[in-house]
Length: 371
Image 1 (cartoon, rainbow, N blue to C red):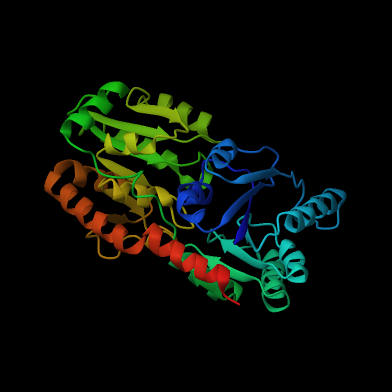
Image 2 (image 1 turned 180 degrees about the vertical axis):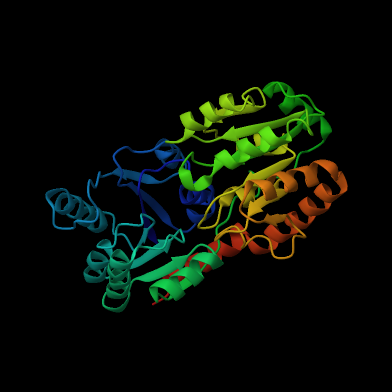
């Protein structure tokens, strides 16, 4: 099959990383294409080329308006790509793009639309979202894919949309536990962290819904109880400057390393004692899968997309979404090394079973071939 993925910008993010990791497996029997529809190509655009994708950059300025000049230009060029490359499957990952399903229908091309989040529209835009989903599914034979059980339930209950649940994955060869104590010591030395420091890590874009400020407040309140506490902060975004400023105001800027976006995420995970994810909501949260594959215990807020990982607090700590609960959970892990080991071992077995790349790819290719 010739498969075209349509993204926003091809950046360091969940779906983009997943299909980059899966390239070696997918290109065994398929030809791969990727289209960046954002203003810029994206940080991973060249990486996609290196992995064997033929890439395109078509900036779609306002995807909500199909019949604008930019919209017509985008779809004319997309039509040409579909015809010239004899595409068999178009897989849309950008949330605001629907119209390729119409083009695909008339060209007899399979169209898959992935739903990546649990965002719930306001009443008026929600009606439009329901109608859009219904039209391309019922009249143009598009199929919808949910990346998590939370997304599946959100689509079913809030948008009356039938989707196929195929969970996210990571490449387990890229995320594995530390080889030995020496590897952890070396990585901590490179970061200027002592081996006996208690190291937290958070990974994700600096945007309001990630609530990184909760972790900064928790570090501030725990500093007297855990003098050797450290936080590795990976990610960037619109809130980054505010978060750095907050750390200075609370006098914990020496305890927090703001590191920006990193490609070698595993190195930072295995240098840590626990992953913190205090998001208001997630589609799923691939970084949790990565952490569990690395045998790093997790503390997650009880929110959509995160509660999919933890049911009985036997493979991580699922907590109320507030700073006091976060502070208590961090101190609980700090105080109990045996619990950290137990949670991380259970989490490792859980992700191997539930978030397995080979299993998900088999089901995805079945969906691509389904009539």
